[in-house]
Structures are given as C-alpha cells and as structure tokens.
Image 1 (cartoon, rainbow over the protein chains, first blue to last red):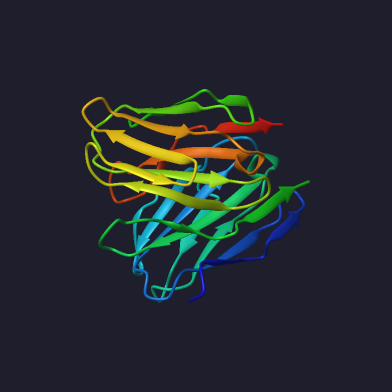
Image 2 (cartoon, rainbow over the protein chains, first blue to last red):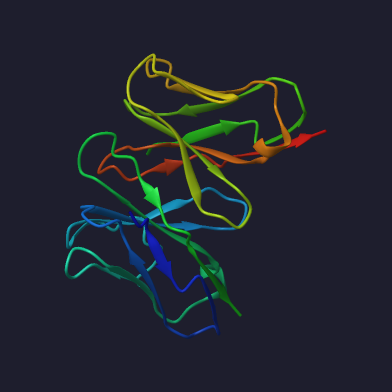
Length: 114
Length: 110
C-alpha cells in the first residue's frame, strides 16, 4: 500500500510569509507525528496526534507553529511569519496504535526561508 | 528529560572492516529503533528492538539492546560502500514520539 506522503517536497518562502505543509499518513494509522530536522542534526519532535486529538505539542518551538488534523487523517503543519531559523526539513510519521509502534516516515518537506 | 547519545558521530571505515556504533539513553525504555538516512532522503527503518537482550540481524548489520545498561549497539560486519549513510537510534519516552540521537555519519572507503 501507499506510504506516508508529504507535500510540497520543497518550499521556498520569504521571511515573514506563512506556509502550510501537508502530510497524508498511511491509511488507518491512528497516530501521526511531526518532526523538524535541521541540517546535519537528528529529527526533533514537534507534535503528536492520536486521531484528531493533538495530545502533545510540547516540541513546537514558538506560537508561530500550529498543527491540525481535523478529520483524523490528513494533517497540516502551519508556520506563520516564517523566520530564517525555521529553515529545515519537516518530517511526518505515522504509526499503528499497537504492536511495535514502528513509525513510518514520509519523504519530508524541505523549507528554505530567505 | 530523555537524552539519547550516539558515538561516534563520524566514522570513516575501510571496506571489509568491522565496527560498532553505540547508542546510550538516559531514562527507562523497553524499545529502541535504528534508522538509516541517505543524503536528501527520509528515514528508513532498520531495526525495532522491543525487549531487553533483543538482537536482530539484517545482512551486514546487527543491532542489540540492553535495557538495564540503557545501551544499544549497531555492529557493522565487513563494511561495503553501500552502507555509507547516516544512522540514527531513537527511543520513545512516552506517547510513542521518538527522541533521536544526533546520528552517526558513516563513510565506507574502498
């Protein structure tokens, strides 16, 4: 079946613009995670959804970051008034809620803020 | 707060040699994951280790988990160029979100 998909794959934004990044998880996966990966670093947790409920947003770096998953499937990560330090790859992952809890990662969206 | 530390961060190996990458974590967890990432690509799952003493092998890679020591190892046997990549270990503290190590950038030279 299809894996996790993300769009767009690449996004260039001017500082101060708002951006929206989309994640389509694997069908039927209950849990969805967003991570931020800066160049040369490991992914860092941003936020977590179980179905439509956002259970943990402790990793969001500022109130300019907002995520939603209104129908418990597709999720959108929105960044308002982008800053240069927001430049990174944003990874989405989904998982079943049982078994190994293995997370399946999407290809990522590379955001460059100029 | 959970800390995950990998070493070495950079590893240059000759083809045919063996080496081990270490992953230490600071709080209790009964699961640990290893991922591979090629430049410009996403994360590919290598191993899921679910219990103390778990050992898994795939090709030239073997991973093990010691939950009492809070240590996992990724052993590379007879390295080949195709193994060149960055390897991450990750531990889920709660809610199943992952805390990642900084990664080990492996280069295998002929």
